[in-house]
Amino acid sequence: MSIINSSAFEARDYQRTIAEKAAKRNTLVVLPTGMGKTVIAVMVGAARLDTFGGKILITAPTRPLTAQHTRSFEQFTHIPMEDIALITGNASPDTRKKIYEKATIVAATPQCIENDLAAGRLNFADFSLAIFDEAHRAVKNYAYTRIAEKYMKQAKHPLILGLTASPGSSRGRIDEVTANLYITGVEVRTEADADVKQYVQETKQDWIYVDFPAEHRKIKEELEEILKEDVWWLKEKHYIPIYKPGRKMLLAAQERAAASYTRNRGNYGALWAMMRTAEAVKLEHAIELLETQGIEFLQDYLQRLSASKKRTDIRLMKHKRMHAALALIEEAHAATAKHPKMEKLREIVKQLAKPDVKIIVFANYRATVEAIRKMLEEEGVSARSFIGQQTKDVGTKESVGMRQDDQIATLASFKRGEFNALVATSVAEEGLDVPSVDYAIFYEPVPSEIRNIQRRGRVGRQSAGHVFFLITKGTRDEAYYWAATHKEKRMRDALSEIQHGRPAKKKGNLLDYAAK
Image (tube, rainbow, N blue to C red; front, top):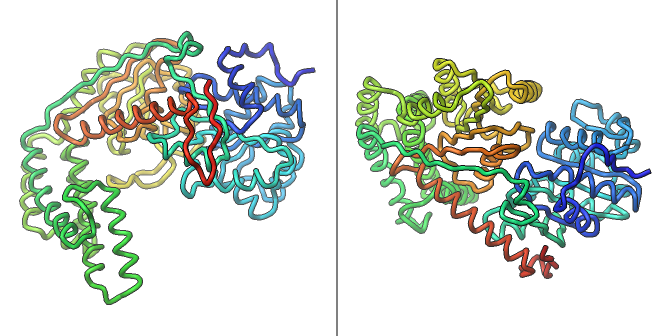
């Protein structure tokens, strides 16, 4: 009897084509969100078990996502449920070891797998397939890279399957992922491909612009003047190469200065550079809060800096221009604390909200999520917040996170239609089984092509969808939107190169990428 339960689903042509190729060599599958990557994983898994027997490893960034994979194997195969195991850190080490030995399908987060490998509780000798979901994470020091290396060394019949909707914005990033996962073939499908197009629903996009208030601009000018002093000092002292650095460049300069000071405690130039970069990063963040979130959020952030005993914070808050900025903030706050995007969002949702409509609103900060939820409830829209598990929202107010069980319960309730609007941070972008929605609203654009693609992928699965971008003119909102757009174009260009068989140099050899 075949392992596949053919009565449970009907594979699409592109899924069969990809699975047939992926069952023969280490493959990275790049497929739009909602287009059945888990089905492909099941099909490849069944082929490997039919040929080599053994076991299958599934790893994904979160427990809900690993659970989703186990449910797919339960639903779409004849493998007994007792042979399909979801391993969590709640199980004792001895229990986990026994599960690894007994189960046919093993699903766990990479941290759990890495710990058990290091402790000798897990050996990959009998695993004929390793599935890495959200494979774009296989860069730098993420656990995927070490797990893949160990798997390729230990497995008697190794095969790796990587799954992602967005592998990265550059050929270099994609090459890093493929190298770290020992990929020798890449299967790419986009919404425009003939064998996928018939399954993709139309997604409309609208860009809603609001003006940056004049009183906000005055505050921004004061903060930028302070920032300019730090940046010019760092440039003149050769800690940064340009006068308009991004946050990443400032953080890199701070790391170099800290390393220099660690080597030589008498290097007060490096100590001063550490203070200057720390101050610049905080000013960048303050300006971003003002531009994208509003006066209330900036005021809260600066109040906490005022209460800080850190030397850098004390110096920053004593600056004469900061005093001027604080006076302007008090004046603006007395007039209105709300960012104009909040009022625009109110208008949009009032027009969209109907009993059978599902809406997801993405916002970067938990305090913003809560403010949006309250506003929607005031307008009679049934809404719930959806945030991560961390206990602190960096850069804004402290907040207690959601437990993973509460996250899963909230999503199940949303899927059943018990409320209309889910207001979420980035936790809803990846790693959780978020139901398809009719409308997605970006309260602020994000500069990451990966996050942009994942957010948009929440609409247009079963029916036509609509995405709205709220953008404040002349601010980081515009810069971030275009940054993500350009990165996404570069990603598609890089994937097109791979599709057409133009490989890049990787760790001393050329990978044999195949066209579709």
